[in-house]
Figure 1 (cartoon, rainbow, N blue to C red):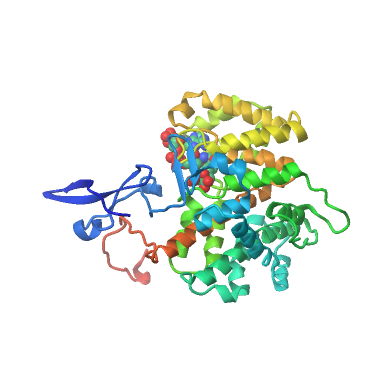
Figure 2 (cartoon, protein in one colour; figure 1 turned 90 degrees about the vertical axis):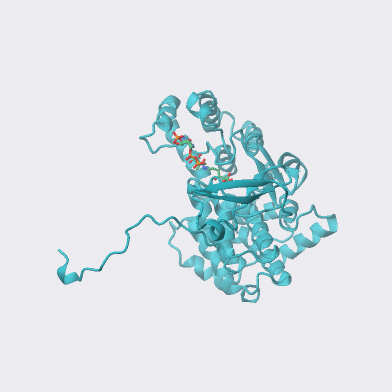
Length: 433
Ligand code: SDX
């Protein structure tokens, strides 16, 4: 990024400092403080990084004020309508929409790696039946660094990273589906490489050896859209975790495993499951919407409206708009009068007209309606966030790759403002009361 004429002035005591202002391609601006500490001995402080950019990136543009989301410049609405998930993954990772030859080659590279090493099945057997699929997913993805010994070397080596990317993209659905099968005590279903990415995942999830699995085309299409909508979202918590861990030059698999752990939290990717549990709680509590709206507004009550609000979107999350439409179609065909969908719409209606939510610009986010779709597809609640991870995988990979291709990003090592004790003498234990 070229420096530009704009400068910001910082006045500290009697000193004035000029800080360059970086201007992004959409006119978004950043005061570059890369040299601040060296010049002033000061750092900045920003709880939760709400005002801090950790990097420059060309992958995804999110305009929270106007509810805009673009992958490599393409509006999410167009991609969701015209592309499939592997095409979107290619776009995010390599920067351009693939030609049909490039896409077929990418799909073929992935197909070659969908199987897990047979030894890995023993890892699944070691988990108790109640093991949480997100915990299994992060653990088993981490062990890919053991079984894929040939590609855990230099992240800057394009051949090694491409092979690691194919393997990571290929094995995530298999690991995810095996996590589910393990949790219900059913035999693993091997990947079928004549199937598409989404078909293969649903087949591994729901097929059983004793009978032919009848796949609903609507569910394959819905999954395809959901994975696309979850594919990337800039420097969110889990992507920042992948970049942070990856900045130490550790391999891709270990970096992705860290992202999975970050995504699991109920404030992040875990919100889709938390939202359904919240809707079920409200339903069983007599559908008293106002009671829960009041709880969400009460500063002394830890209850929050799950699937609502966003650090960046201060307008309707464009992904929620698309998901709501998909939800409507599936509910009409497969779950007419689904009480949770009706209640979710009523809850949204009450909330978006309540001054508390309006003043704080809280709208439904990507997690508010997605769980209703998963539920109709027969996906169990403890697998909802696993599907979020499946969707977010190409975004994580794209950011990890961008960081290493951009001339080797520095290891991420924030500073801190120390507010603990000043120096003091140790009192020997024998004298301590
Ligand atoms: C995702 O970053 C990304 O891009 C994430 C994501 C992605 O694609 O990667 O979009 C995916 O994680 C979506 C968010 C899923 N999480 C939830 O739905 C959980 C519920 N939402 C909230 O916990 C919250 O809105 C966050 C975590 C999403 C955002 O938190 P922030 O930006 O730190 O906002 P905040 O907690 O400072 O809230 C500001 C105010 C507070 O009230 P006041 O202190 O001003 O009185 O809004 C209130 C909050 O109490 N508030 C809510 C609320 N969300 C914010 N009050 C009730 N219910 C909510 N859901």
